[in-house]
Length: 199
Image 1: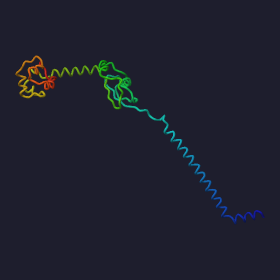
Image 2 (image 1 turned 45 degrees about the horizontal axis):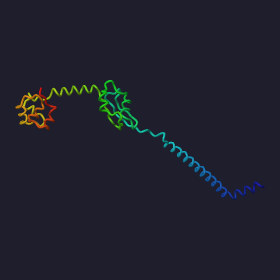
Image 3 (image 1 turned 90 degrees about the vertical axis):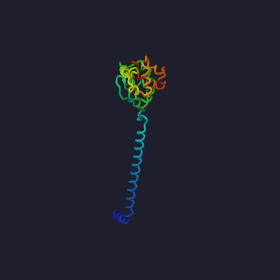
Image 4 (image 1 turned 60 degrees about the vertical axis):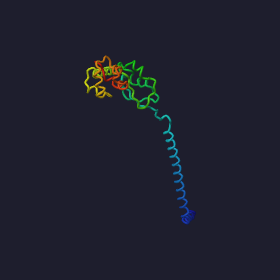
């Protein structure tokens, strides 16, 4: 008898009961979605904090090129604020061919390096090569005691008139006589003095 009464009540109120069930389902689904979003937000926030930790920042550096009389010439990455002496050390130190005198006179080992800087360490071989080139140049100078008119005119500032005066005042014991004999002015002499000789 009691079961029949309950069955009649359920059948009579079937629609409202169904609405209650659907409402409970939607509420529980919405609550779960809200909790899920909150958890996701917290995870993303923690990840973002890890990305900006200062320990992951790379130190500042510069790149330099060092050559000449060092053991291992090449391109090196150096900490910002390094000095030339640090670059020499990085390249293995001075080689046995280094010109110690020129290094001490012309190179400031305490100078701060800049990005992209090129450093050349003076070498004894380079000094010898320069001396050889200078000797060759001297042997190829124009002899003012024996050169022709056209050869003298090839010099800067020397035209036909001055070339003729040089020839007419031969011989010369020293190239400076071109000035003392008032054949050339000091300005023109300074331009050609390294290109002429008397022997």
